[in-house]
Amino acid sequence: MTNTLSANAKRNAIFLVLVASLGYFVDIYDLLIFSIVRQKSLHDIGVTDADMRLQGVYVINMQMFGLLIGGIIWGVIGDKLGRIKVLFGSILLYSLANFANGLVHDLNTYAVVRLIAGIGLAGELGAGVTLVTETLSKARRGYGTTIIAVIGLFGAVAANMVGHYGWRNAYFIGGGLGILLLLLRLGTFESGMFKNIEQADVQKGNILMLFNNRKRFLKYLYCILIGAPLWYVVGVLVTQSPEFGKALGSTITLSAGDGIQYTYIGISIGGIFAGVLAQLTKSRKITMMVFLLLSLVSVVCYLSCKGINAQDFILLCSFMGFSVGYWATFVTIAAEQFGTNIRSTVTTTVPNFVRGSLIPINYLFNLLVLHYGMIKSGYIMMIALTAISLFSLSQLKESFSKDLDYVEDEKNFAS
Image (cartoon, rainbow, N blue to C red; front, side, top):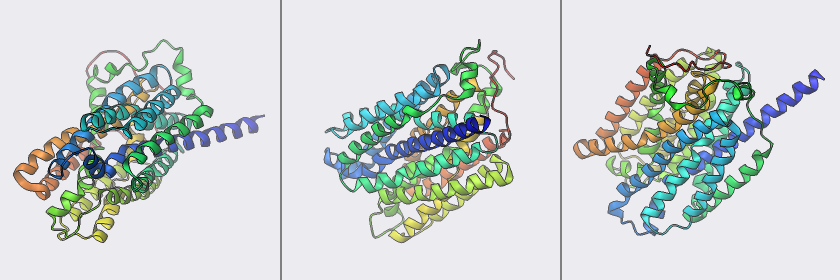
């Protein structure tokens, strides 16, 4: 009987990791599809070449703002009502928004629908990682989140491939993938740790708990800041690669779609190495430090590649992607830093706040470009973000072997 229960638990855990991985696959597909079809889609709805970069920033900022809002909404729902409800609600909203995205004909409607899609998308990664970290053992949860990252990040490859068949079709296909995933999730089960506190007399999903205690707030802030360089690399250096190519003296127009595809292939491979390194060293902090320093080196190589050609671009994007392959490690760190009663809130808001950090990053980068140009501004932003991330990492405690079956003290005090 015990062996049967153990076998069932193992099958359930494998199925959960698979569902979370496919959810992240859809997450990445939708997150990047605009960057891939940016020029073609904006041109088709009447945006001129002269306005292309700034109007593209406007639309992607709306998408990222949606992720900020959705991160809070779905994170709180996950802690109050359960992780499974987030997995169903978020993918449904995302799917409907993507179908609508394929029907837009003006810039503002495009931006508003991307905002709604961002809200829906925000629950995917956090709920999946929360379920996996709470279900798998301490020794195996790192492998589980690494598998999620590796499978999920191939959503970028799919997005680039689908993008060649028309930008409207790309959004319709994204919505269809979401509906299929919704059906697959009918077999998922709730986290045992959440069930243990579901009826307990403890505050669940109270986001104010992250702000009413100085030590807890700083820990939360540091969890966000350690991931910021990744979204600068993807959201600025690769997304705006056509403009960077011109600044570097390229004789061809660099393809943002190809850049994103190879960046995410690199991220997938880097994610495997990051996961293995964390298991070997039994330290997520050492792993993050290694990859943060490597990402700085990769960006310096990219920004110093004068006369960059298509082959150089693909190699450099793969290198930059590999060097920021710490996404799963970073999200796992966030999940391991907080108790079960606010873990979903943290694990859902942290990656979405990192994604949302692209809004101020874009704003600051645009200001720098006015004074220093694309290349110098690229260096300044990466050096600053890396320094902030390394400092934030130094302030967090190692969490590799931490027991996660506990709740946060809800008292309001400063420490």
